[in-house]
Picture (cartoon, rainbow, N blue to C red):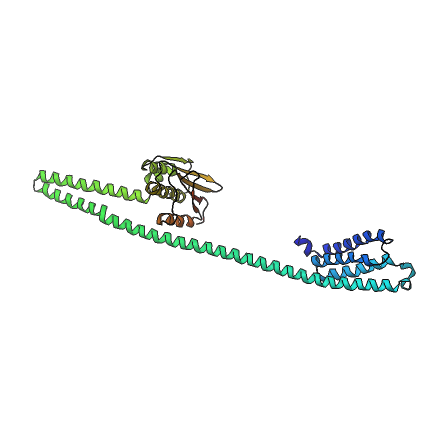
Length: 343
């Protein structure tokens, strides 16, 4: 429609079609209406052309309509002297009416176009505001993720210093004492110190393993998301069914999916009072869709720090998190993680 409005040739064709169509309609009615009152139909045609193609073609349609009406109600072969004064007056009134109608219609057309332009501009501004708000939320989420990451790294450093590092320092000191005892030919004291040192070393290994597990489970790194979720389900106090496609995905997607399931199952175990849960993950329309469902009491809160952290992690990947009530009881947590995410 916009292309037709912009085409001058289309306007010229419309002018000829409108005037020709009205003339063909009025021609058989000359006997019923020997006057020019039926010429009001030409005014309607002028309005149509002016509203669609503007004032110039509207004025041209007015002149062409007056000429057509003059040909219908006069005998052109007799010349202008055969034209009755009443017909001349009526045709003149019709021409003036058509011109006024063209002016009014063109003004209305301009108002409509102005309104359409304002609406388009408002829609564009609204879309820009939405996009700006979305980008601001992503920046805020990334800032929170970075802050959380810094805090986690500080916690890891503290855990290493207070745990495994101290154990290893005690191991070294104990082994040095054992060496001195053996040098003094005190095998029993040396053996006891070696045993003590081995105990410190084993404790350090255990603490390092637990610390590494908190950062990223070894099962997830080695076997992908299915292995990671299976290991996670085995540690839950309630039965958890795992349904995951056997497909390796980018590590950041697998890690995010793992933490979504881990947080959801933790909430189920602490608050839901459920007897069973199901964790699913499957590719869908270029994204990994992760769902965790339980048969608990429902009423899960979305304001917890764990879920806020998940939203931030997902926002960085342009993902989304939704929490809904299941029909029949329980809660469903759904995360959508784009597989092709921005860098």
